[in-house]
Amino acid sequence: MPDIYTDDLLTVAEEALQPPAHLTPAQLAEWHSHTLRKRLPLIRQALRLACEERDSELATLLIDEAITEHPDPPRALRAVGGDGASLPRPSQANPPTEDELPIPEHILCPLLYKHWNLTIEGQPPHEVYLARRPIGWTGLGDPFERITAPTRHELLRLLGCRILGIDQTNGPHPPLT
Image (cartoon, rainbow, N blue to C red; front, side, top):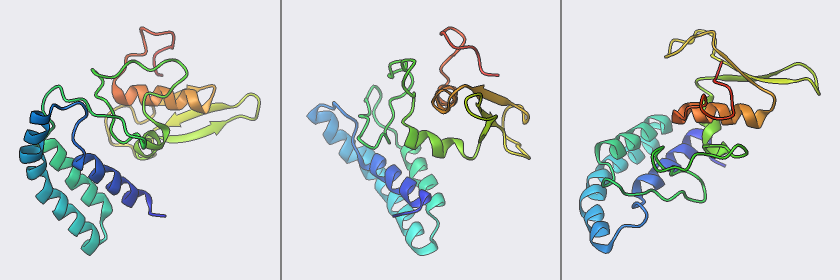
């Protein structure tokens, strides 16, 4: 089983090589001749770097850069694959219902681990799920910020909505603390 960085690399490479969903044949031909052709050298370089230097994390960043520099045509929807790697953009996504996560859990958790320390405080049945910034946090936001929720699922939902920029103040849920 590959490590998390190799798994991320393979997921991002697959996403970079997949055309958007619902393209007409003419749009698909254009995507292959322009977008994919420009992405391939960067993807090849990233895979070579991963093999020779054993640096999957840097290779993943190179492929992300290829996708950013050579984006899909405007208004091209990305299909959400069975692995959840291709997420719809927030303007295309339906707001998540109260019971579902806005981002699939296997994608959300790796996104969170560098930015939040997730813990449980208290004893059952009075436990509280808590997200704190890591010690020495130098990123955006308050280094002493805490987000609490009664369940793990609710905490992941709150953090997922936060990543996507979905406003929680207008819904039934209180704003993040």
